[in-house]
Length: 114
Image (cartoon, rainbow, N blue to C red; front, side, top):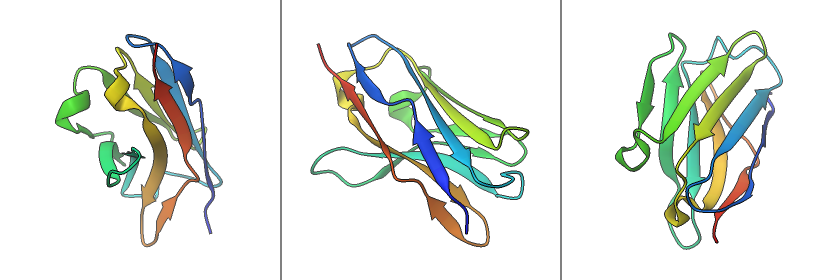
């Protein structure tokens, strides 16, 4: 069993920045990919960004140029730097780890509002 704990969410004004962290309870290097998903009220959960074990990132078009995913294997942590935030980025953000088994975190709320 692997625990994923997200942190860093909160309330931010449009144009602001937040940095989300996902701390894993064990070594993340063995996972094929680590990802961030989000789910807004009334909408399906969507993939926001992912990063493979060899550090190849991938982003949904709506966040390209604004969000950056990174990983620190020594700290067993994945980050999502979110800049130029928009109200439509408001959602619960979930960390995801894909290996032999897929794991999910509990989510952290991000609210972008003036």
